[in-house]
Length: 345
Image 1 (cartoon, rainbow, N blue to C red):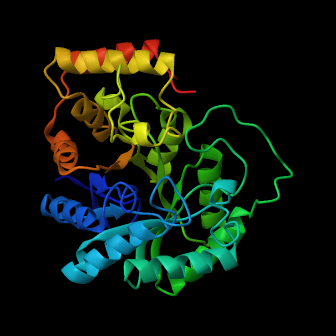
Image 2: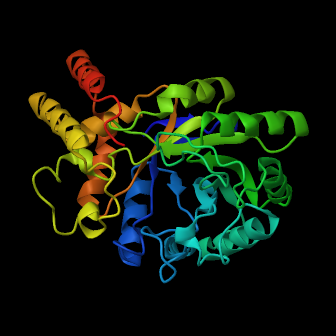
Image 3: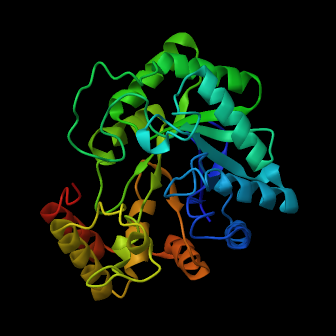
């Protein structure tokens, strides 16, 4: 396993981070524990969760993911050897059951952190992240920014950072990070931190994969210069880069079970996936491992968040660290990207 510093901290995190958003929906508690045991045995020390999980989010299952991690931590011990990350939910209609509509203000963040600590059965969170901005912007990797200056749900970033400062001072949070953020959002947080002595952002958890490389446009430079490295989520684009959805709908697969995850199910995107899968097979590579190996080698990356619903998938994902992409494969990836630069709408 490879390890890298988390931002400007002294925390060494594994190049692969174990994602958990299927635990409580597609995976049972026992299966979650099995994944955790195996991942840690392979050297993964970085675990990512969210108060909202599992996904798809709903009131009946909210918090189960953190609870499964908490029960595992209680049984296993060794909390100090792990880097535990979770997220506070931003405002959105689809999570209105959380605190009657979550906000990133003092009252809501206080409630959120206490709930997460209780479910995780720990006294502190190593990396506490804002799941998405409270302002209206093009997060979740979307294109096409539209200004909404009168958005009633917006909490000023300074107010949010001041709450997080209190949590750091109290020892409930060690470091903070952002998720689904834009270059403006990251740099504004950096400015507030530097000018007001507020906690500094250590990472940005955004989507990044062969079909969605929007992070490279503005955030890559920020990651290098401000030490806010990428925690890449959805590195397999909801599993579509495995090729398993080409010309079929596997019965128990995520996109089949939950049609809402259809971002990569468009003619132009499918054509790009077909090209990437063909390139992998041409060079004797597993499509999933080629896709993960590409993400793993990015210079602005801190860690790749891998998620799996089966142990076979988890083993394969972890084995991607041993995959080296030669010059021919890299050229092939570049050629495909030049043809399908932004295939996902």
